[in-house]
Length: 374
Image 1: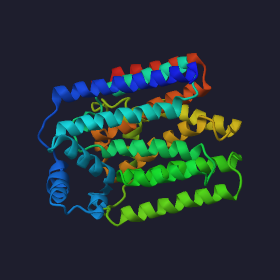
Image 2 (image 1 turned 90 degrees about the vertical axis):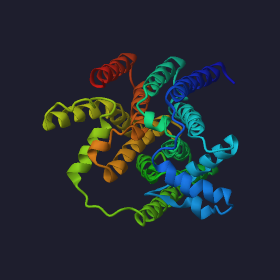
Image 3 (image 1 turned 180 degrees about the horizontal axis):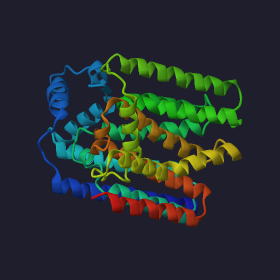
Image 4 (image 1 turned 120 degrees about the vertical axis):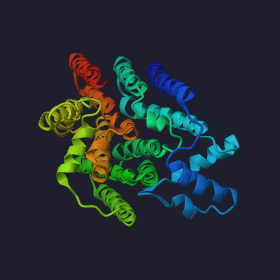
């Protein structure tokens, strides 16, 4: 291993462990051993009794929980039951904390592997700072909330393997399996396909991907997306679509973590402020997209996974905004996903911008965070 690779690994690993230790402290301080909310029905009524009676089937593991298929979370719950010997929500919380920290390790590796040690240090420091604040406390302190972590895990793997490898290669096919696995994590996992399709289509248009194999790969992804949507639609609740409500929900989520403490503002001012927050957060990704359209980077460039993960966060926002009221978009269980937009945008700046621009944007994010969050 080269000295630079060793430095990269050490920085990313220390960052993941830092977040893990903070999560473990939070669990030790505030964990409740009593199962909460959906745990009673999903685990206490369905999963554990059927397993202990020897009646649990693959169909049970793949079945819907509300509008979600939570296959991987059910497997993790069974694993914690076997390891602990009894149903222990705090033990599930610890397992989730380890899972989330491992995901952050993979995430930082995906978007920062070619950065210089100095720039990677900035990215890691910002990531640790953001995820040390317990925005996602609901996920940390609820043993049943691992689906939100699995969605991120398989999305990072799928995005990285698909957008940086030629279609129909073995690495690309592993990415396809990760896409399917993401659909079995939570309903919004299907939107990972939308982000990979969008980036692959851009690569084809720019000539980064050439040949019939690439069009076939795009077709395979599109078919899986249609199958996933059809699968979800059979269990989704019918609802009237209020475009204005969906747009407000998108703005509310896209502005996080900026400008969320503005309930005292008039409605128009609130919307304008949150649009401004969203623009600040996502502007680096738009800048990186323009850079990619002009420079046409190679398939192995770090530009592509950064853009794809930015598109993925946006896709998650749209998917959840469609099914949830705008005033619930800052619910703690979603914030671990919304928060990823900040390090992804920072990675975009670190790839294409001068240090002074990086410093100014980072300062704006930190100032906005302290100025608006109580």
